[in-house]
Image 1: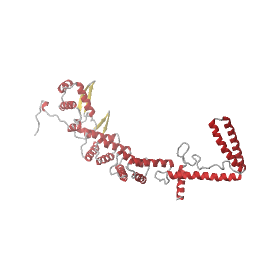
Image 2: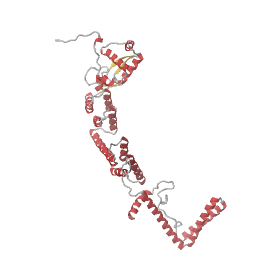
Image 3: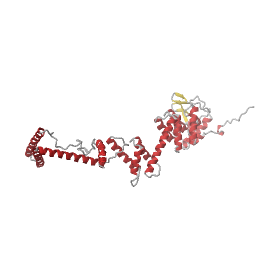
Image 4: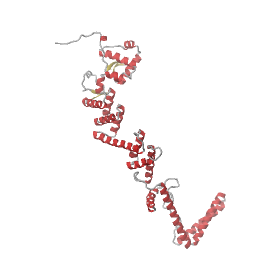
Length: 427
């Protein structure tokens, strides 16, 4: 027993199949005239009929230029392909959108596009690359299940590009989709950023993803703890997360030191992460200058360090005075020379200000003579020339902690340790 159906010779009495994918994914954002062109062309394509540009233009009430723009648009969208026949001549080939969903690329002309099989080929220029479609199909179906929605052809192409262009593994892609879905971030562009970042970070396996998510969960716990310490009962903003990340990843602080800074910040009138960030930046710079680890607390304050410098200067000056008394007792002529040098120095200043060049020259000669005389007397009596001078520990800053250029002196690192011992011994 055979079956047949009456053939209708007039195709205007037939129906034209329009894929739901086109209606849902492509039609809403397309200009109305472009949709007219697509549907009218689809009518003729499904009935294997020819239509001239002139006649189609007349039927649709559009210019040929407008129709050309419409076909260019649909080709950019990937739903048709222009098959060149010559200069400014081409046929329009309508693509099977369902095959695009899982076949991902353009099919070779020899392929049976009406077949339901996924054993297709991707065409890239002259090269045809076999596609393990069962594996890709399973990946796309798993993603659809995780997201709870069907994928559009555009989304399917994007996911395929992750495997082809980014070299992302299935584990990384599925891990990223699950992570984003849990955050209710189901947009394909958002997921793509996560896949790209993870792949650039060298993630390959499910274990890589799990370890990263554990670290990420710990970091989010850190955000929460920081804000709670500051009395802020909310989630961290993106800017705040970046600042907090920099404390650990760039500056190298541990949790204990961060909590010290947060505790300090909790006492201001309006606690905030920016204040804590400034505290930690200052600590970081101080540690860098001192040459110590940022997590080694500086138990000596600036005020205490300055007190220690004051102590060192007074000590040096007192010791110099003691040596001077010793020399003046044994060598009274040295005292006389020093007193005359002081007097000459005062006169020299007055003459310089008064522009008395001759007097200035005479005073300088006398000073030079007395200095030579002083050096001779000191060495003849077994004293160094500078025996009565003040001996500072650091000649760069004269035990002030600041150089002549106004920079912090390199001796502060050593003085910090000494100041701590000195401070403890004077408690």
